[in-house]
Length: 374
Ligand code: GMT
Image (cartoon, rainbow, N blue to C red; front, side):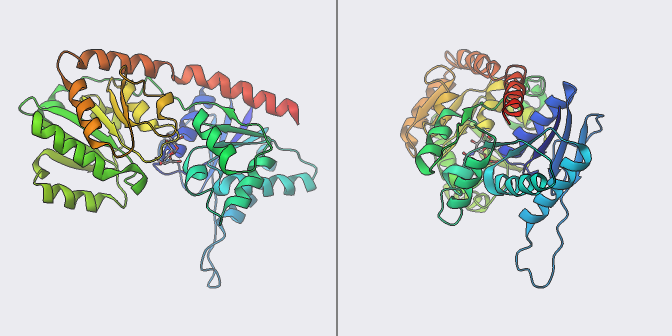
């Protein structure tokens, strides 16, 4: 197949899923064309089946906001036509699904049919999409897509709750490449971070308010009162500076390091004992799956799609949003030396259920079904 993939090329989860899906499809022999405004961060190598088309949008003094969606739609039209694509797969509804609708209509006027699959990732529905300033366009473009997938059952449920959806929504969960995300021998790294045998706790996110960064710090501060522990914070975003200030005020800076946007997250996860994800909303929790693949148990909230990934009392624990005391209790239970290795093994076994080799054929079959239908 010749597939066009549209996504945000940044560090966000939806961009990572889109890029890894494209890479896996290319490995299977499909020709995959990425259409984005910059090179996706995990696509920095040469492969005969992978192509990249940059969306060029020009500014003009009249535009306070350059019309990216129009430039994207125009690029989709040209790539579909010139590369003779069979299908467009857009990740994250805003504005990719509506841009794809426009491209599809332009192509139709020229006698070209292109099926469009939209994958809903989370905040495009739960946070941004349902806002009245976007809702009518999101509803319309979901209903006009030829295929719609959601990364969890909970996200599918939320989509039907918040929008007037007349289309079918198929759940295809996110996946992990276990060749990349696996526990590596990094003992020297662990020694450098935890010289006195402290337990190592990790948090990864884009540091947005929805991730509840203060809860990460508070749970860690509680754990640290009971056992020697260190915390590594990976990623960056608006909540980072307030979090650093909070650490200073709590006097725990020496035990916390902010590492910023790291490429090789799996190296850090390889030496971690526990992963914390206290999010307010989380449609899937890809960062938690990455941790589990590296044998790291997870303390999370019970929101969104997290219960579909993290299994209570098996791969970790789930608490109500903001329940710091419960998260602390659960963390200390997991970190007990009699329990830790069991949780680590369970985390890996669960992650294996999301291996890309299991999910890729599901996407391929779905594409086939959509192409046959139109
Ligand atoms: O919130 C993020 O981490 C970014 C966002 C995105 O679209 O890039 O993530 C969403 O999509 C990820 C990939 O499907 C999911 O794993 C995340 O759970 C989801 N984030 C939220 O729902 C808050």
